[in-house]
Image (cartoon, rainbow, N blue to C red; front, side):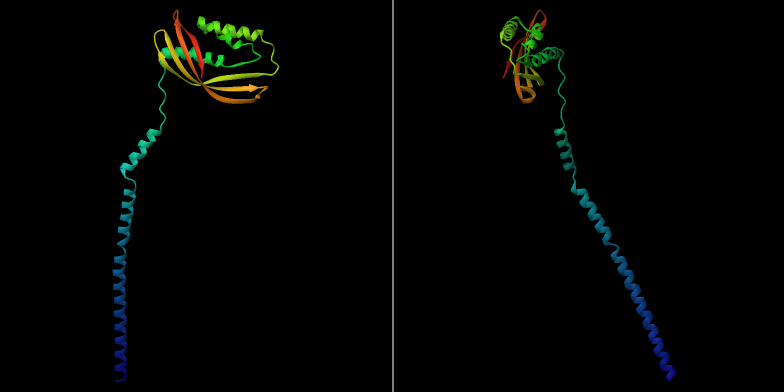
Length: 202
């Protein structure tokens, strides 16, 4: 009787262990299968968010803005305009660069490019400078053209607008100030040659 009861207990305990093991395996199996699904949906939702965060419209807007910011090269000058600039640009720079000790030598250099009326004005300036007494304290201006534009061009007359940068010095070149000044240049064609008729410093 004693052995029979002990055997029953062993069988019951063994069966219980088997049932518990089977239940644990089943729970682990189904749990593993259920938890494998969410990462797929998360990945899909992340991809969807990445795709919709930058739409084609936004991309096109960015490109368009970039194109608007891009600098457009200035159109090439026509041959007739280039001929005017080739005379007017160095003329203005030389005319606008002088000193009180230079006797207006800058004007003497550009006399051949002036009309008769302009030459008369320049000759008077040169004479005044030669008659003036020597100036011991130096003062002078150097001029460079920053930009230019042909505002009108006809068969025998033309007009240009220029922006210059001028450096005015007193005593020494280190004691100076720099400023910009607009210049209007009028030119006429005499005998097939372009000449400067008026230079108006504004």
